[in-house]
Image (cartoon, rainbow, N blue to C red; front, side, top):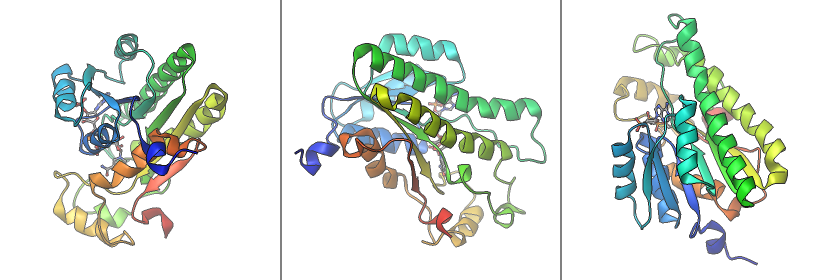
Length: 255
Ligand SMILES: NC(=O)c1ccc[n+]([C@@H]2O[C@H](COP(=O)([O-])OP(=O)(O)OC[C@H]3O[C@@H](n4cnc5c(N)ncnc54)[C@H](OP(=O)(O)O)[C@@H]3O)[C@@H](O)[C@H]2O)c1
């Protein structure tokens, strides 16, 4: 039987992560590298991707250009990469307009993030099947894929949490379940990792104060608090876990 350390060890594994330069993506890319994986850091800009890869601990990491809103770049990147053991679908093209102001075109564009997650996940599944290897796909969901937001938290500070984002992340969660069922027999696991509030440095401190009051732990999440869970889902430690939604939200969705 493997030891706990062996189960979490990603030595010899390759992990592709989109949005690797981002607030949460950079912490998760570091986690995968620290656990021993060779990380392929994806960004829409090749030089950014390469910089992220060079900043990671360990050797053999590379950067790749990938815009999940553009199917051709997914195909191009996957042709270069080949089979990977882990995909973290983390990149996100944001759209700030809320239900009052969003146009139909922008709403549809926001939903296209799910199309990108699907196309990349399918390409990873197909490459794994062709190479006769297993793979773990991790989709970034959100607490807002499960619950509505509090109107009073946003009022007078900024737009409400965008309706299109709720539609998107709810869709990503259910896409996870659907693909997990279809791909289980291929040896491809698909799980959703749903963070709660992890405000980046640009978020208004006034909003952060209000959001804290909505959290049972009375605080916001910190990027390193996703490191353990991403390694868990990526590794053999979760070999019997698929179609799951792993919520890391300080209890936000528990009350
Ligand atoms: N922060 C939170 O509180 C929170 C809560 C729940 C869920 N999440 C989810 O967690 C993920 C990461 O969020 P974050 O807060 O770290 O956001 P972030 O700092 O804005 O990072 C997102 C990254 O996505 C990349 N990106 C943008 N458009 C893309 C595209 N079309 N194709 C591929 N990559 C693209 C960008 O990297 P490049 O510019 O280098 O391409 C960007 O660095 C997202 O899926 C988000 O919805 C975040």
